[in-house]
Image 1 (cartoon, rainbow over the protein chains, first blue to last red):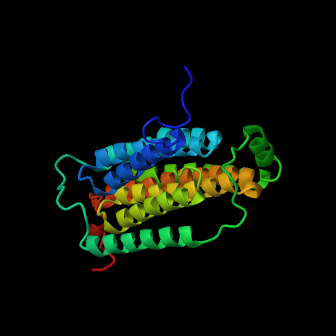
Image 2: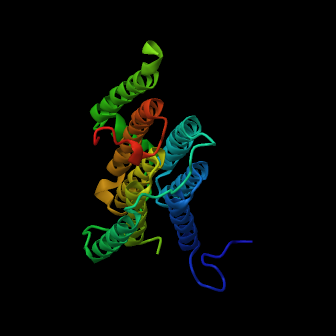
Length: 177
Length: 103
């Protein structure tokens, strides 16, 4: 049986439904990241937000970026952050207030920023906008290793520097302790 | 809706604002780093959305998004190492207790 193009009763297309669900999951869990009291749960909500964002990348026709999102953000950064949480938060540390005193002005500023970005983005004419087009992975690879090979190499040097710097910063105590 | 650039720009704007709020309002240094990651993700979503809707940017946008991810990984490594180093000296992850330069 063929799946109809749109949802039978509502008349919305499947990709719209996917978009709405993924966007709601992403924004909802991002909101949980900044509001939850328990920081471990913040980290887990962040993983959910990253996963939903990977789904949005697939919807945008960029599967390689989605795969890198899962590998780099969920596989590396989120795990790194969870490890740092476990090393710095002790159970008897005072949880007390999660937010600083400036939380209310910060909330107002964030809402104003969201409204500004939304209004600007929808009011601007972006010019040569077409229908959504997928990114071919082989064309992307060719671009990455020809036109963008210098930034690619610079980023690998940057990662090496970050690894060395991270080890240096994290180990420094061991020498003089 | 999923065929319009504006929808993606609006959700990435909302994501960026959530990250901004978290960075300004949370007391925990690691929470602030998480908020920075959310903001970086919002920018990446904008880049990929422009790449998907504007033909001349199609491949370039994905390349830039991949480079941003690598830089974000480097930033997370160094940022967390700095948080660990400060934690070892001050025994607290709360940024408003890092006030020794004010005394």
